[in-house]
Image (tube, rainbow, N blue to C red; front, top):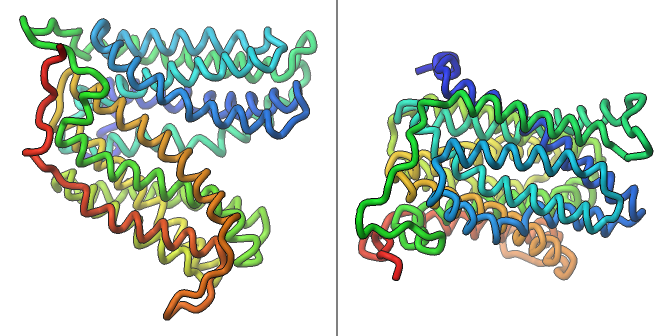
Length: 413
């Protein structure tokens, strides 16, 4: 099935449209949260607090997603979380204390972590199994390709007359963001083809969040998820240092580098289309190896043109790997196990991204130039990126199932 045929399927089209609109609003809102924090405190550290709150809720949201699936079906979970996020975002302009802003940002992210596993585990009910990698790629694209569009929309809306009524900074931006979640709510209401919540068989215990780590397929996919997060975290943390201090490029050229990640992701979707029907876990393993090789090669780039080429290749490999890993979970797991597996998936991505970004930044500051046999003396940013690439490449061997180690979750006591 072509991309056009896939998008013409009503259920998937509704989900994709709702996610594209709400993601656009979400990135508008993220920038508005950072701008509001700076407006209220005049402190760059307060802005960093907002970014931290994009990651910390994963610790709380994962177990909550597992609890939600015990009581609600996936459609209801998504509807409740969209309604909750719309209400929370609409409240932001009404508060003035920075701690209330932090509290609302935290709750919005927790709701998002509960929403995402329900969304991703619903895709197999909307498309054929052979189309899962492409469908996953399109949904991921709708979430992340809207980052520059969200930034541009924030700039336009924030500049409009009346964008801050009653001396409420960025109120119009937040209210538009809230409206995008209501658009998503309306789209998800149309997904009546999603199955209702099934009743657990007598004596069958619900799958808890921590028990998902004992499912062999989850244990196989998580190294790939962590590898993507490690690569992204290292590149985003040290990318600007690399292009400015190592390649003598400008901030504008760094912006081009980031945009090329998105261009590469589109190429990754095309590659997925060409490789339809291949075993998802094997494809995921190949994708991890490619990411490691690309990050290592990127670290040794001697010109901005080669760095740009590496950015395109990384974007393609990351989109390919994530979509393939999602396809493996979707095709082989079902019911509550699938939802909880995706809760683990999103928790690993967010925590891995945060830890990798912090660790890469600290390592870049602490290290000095290092002489590497055969490569000469490398700047700290090159050393950290090279080490990250090698580590990711080695982690590819972990992306395989071991059925004898932790099979299906045992019944809870």
